[in-house]
Amino acid sequence: MSKTTVKDVTTESEPQGPTASPRTVGGSRAFALLLVITGAAGLLAAWVITIDKQKILEAKVAGKTFTPACSLNPIVSCGSVMESEQASVFGFPNPMLGLVCYGIVICVGMSLLARARFPRWYWLTFNVGTLFGVCFVSWLQFQSLYRINALCLWCCLAWVATLTMFWYVTSHNIRNDLLPAPRAVKSFLAEFTWVLPVTHSGAIAMLILTRWGSSLWA
Image 1: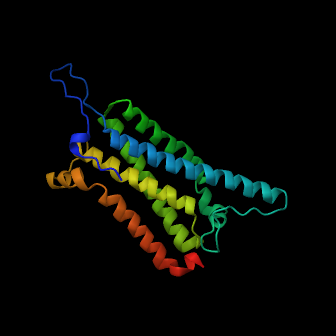
Image 2: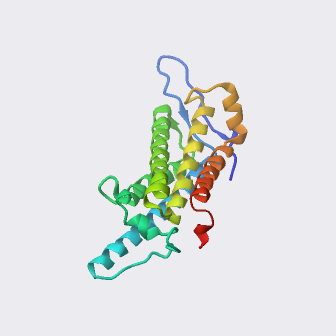
Image 3: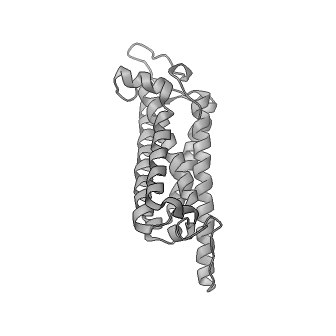
């Protein structure tokens, strides 16, 4: 994964005086590409799940059954997850929310590649959005492991994409003084932001292995 340092971030100089414009902050090419890639990964997962969900519904209407390609065994069973109540927690299929939100992430990344700069409120709003995403997928992880008792591989891809973009957006905001943090934290994030999503993803992997172990491949 690409590392983003403080020097990689482009920031407009803040004008002085009563007519000064609000400070705007851009992002490095590496950061922009990371947003595009993670957004595309999440969008792909949401798109595939949406298509498979539609096929499941069509099969039910026709009195048939449809098994998604990612349903490999009773545990790695995308179909079980898609047909659960938790798959439509807001009254509509969760992937529909992903189609919108991951598309927004891609748009932000593409804008940064075009050297766009955004004010503080924009970055904080974006950060809140990614925080909501992490909280939501964390709830889905718990439901998948301990309530639905099945795992969806496409969901796992969306989980990793979401937590990765969250940690990098948070790091970006802290290093640019958009979020307050001690100097030691800024110094750590300048070189080791990658440690956070790797550790987070590793913790999820350990929970999955602890929950099912070798049964994942049975």
